Image (cartoon, rainbow, N blue to C red; front, side, top):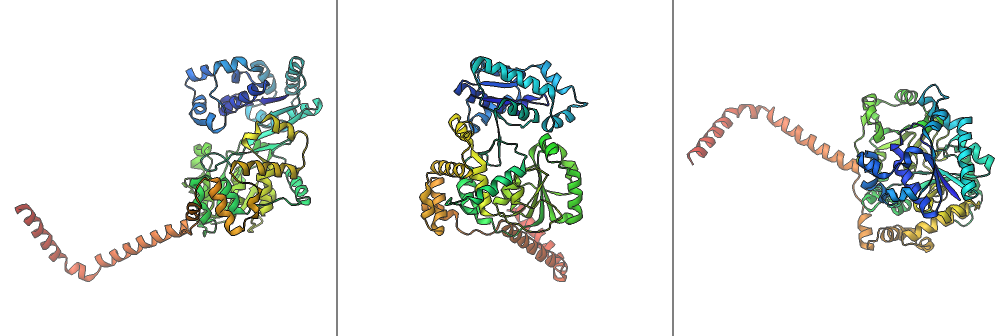
Length: 483
C-alpha cells in the first residue's frame, strides 16, 4: 500500500489544494487512504461555493495540466480519510515561538508530538487496511523520515521541476527515496552512475531541448550561441521555508556580494511570480520582462540562482550556472561559489543523467506499478534506460534514433516528437539572426535616423530656408481651403 501524505505547516492549504486533489485521484484509483490536514477533506463544493481562487485554479487548468479529474463531493465521500485535526495541528506547531520558526524547524528537526501523531495515523491505517509499503510526500519532514525508518516504510519525495506545460512538451518531476535537498547523495549517485555507465546512450544539448521543448519554443535552438547582453543574471526564486532552512540561503548577503563583483549595468534580474510583492527591493536592477525564462537566460553570460529550478535550465542552455545554497540540487553541474569567476559548461552526461535517471516522467510519478518497481531498488542504469525508452516511445521514437548520423538526428527528433514533416523541421532549424543582434540592429538603425535628422534640423541651410518653408506651407494651406 502506498499512502499520500500532505501536511501544511503554515495552516494555509490554498497553495497545495491542487496537489491534494492529485493525491485523491491517485488514492481513489488504487483504493488507498490519504493523510492530510483536515481542511483538505472538505467537500470540493465548499470551496467552489466560497469562490476560492485556489479551487478556481484547479478547474481552470490545473486538473488537465497535472492529470486529474475535476474533484467532486462524491469522490471525497469515497476517499479513505486520515486527517490531522485542528487540535493536532496546534499540538505540533504550538511548541515553537512563531509560525515562521516552526515551519522551518519542522523541516530539519525532530518534533516528538509530530512523530507521535504520524505514528498514530500509520497504525490506524495498518489496523484497518494492512501494511503500508511506502509514503509519498511533496515535502520532506525530519519527523516523517524518522517515523518511516522506525516503521520500515519507504519514503518517496515527489515534486515538480522546471519541465512544465507551455514551455515544455512533456513534464518531468523529482522522484527520489531521499530528501531533494541532499545534494551530497545526489552527487554520489551521479558518480556511481558514471562508473558503470556501460552502453547507455546520451543526447547532446540541442537534441535534449528538441525532445522536450514545446513546438512554439523550438526557435531557441537557433540562439544557444547568441552573444550575451549582460555579464550576470540573478534568478530570484520563491525562496520557501525548505530553501531557507535546508540550503541556508541569505538573499541579502548574496545580492551584496554580487554588487561588489559586477557593475550594476551588467546585471539583469528575474523574479519568481510569487515575489512580485518584493519588486521595490530589487528596483535598482534591470528587471527582466522576457516572455519566458529561456529568453532571459540567453541574454546572460552567467546565471546566479537562489532556490530556483532555473539552475538546471541554465545548464541545459549551455550557460554557466552558479548554484547557491549549501544543499540545493544540481551543484555538481554548476559553480557553487561566487568567488569562482569562471565559465563552466555542464557536461552532457550530467544533463542526461538528471533528465532520465534523477527525474521521472510526470505520468509515472503517480503510477502504482512504476512506484512499486522503483521500490525494488533497480540500478541507476536500469532506471535511466527505462525512463529514456518510455519517453522516446511518447515522442514516437525508439533507440534506433542513435543509429542516425548526428547531422540528421536532430531533424528526425523534431519531426517525430512534434509530429511535423522533415521539411518543417528543417525550416525551424534555419539559421536566424541572434535575438540580441536583431535588437541591436534596430536600435542602431533608429539611432542613425535620429542622428541624420538632428544634423538636418541643426544645419545652416535648414535655418536659412525656414522663411521659405513657412511661405510654402502657408500657401499650401490656403490652396486647400479654396479647393
